[in-house]
Image (cartoon, rainbow, N blue to C red; front, side, top):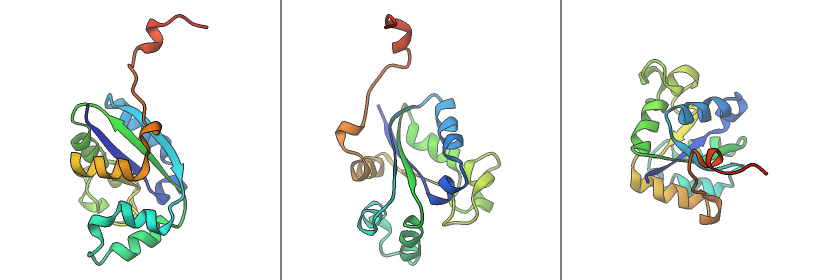
Length: 150
């Protein structure tokens, strides 16, 4: 089953949008199989965003990621990478489609609420950067319906 990393950035946490982002992902039918709040250290932020290290926005992005906690989650489901990218919208809010998270809540291209992996390969690398295998779970959506209480 395909997995993707979703990172609710410091501005998303400070604007109290954690529940909103999670709700949108779950309403699409995707499972949350990993979830945690973290405060980035510089080296970990640089590791996560390593593919962008030579871009001019990199230092500002790293600085921004250190300003407040983030919430990292792993979502699972068929086509999750592409669909989550569609839910998030374009990096710059004015370029994002109406109804996307970034169009509705982002301030600009850096303070854009949420990060989503851009490919299955990136998702694997990013998930491994932030989650150990013991922090990821598998379960059936209807498990509780089939088991006896108590």
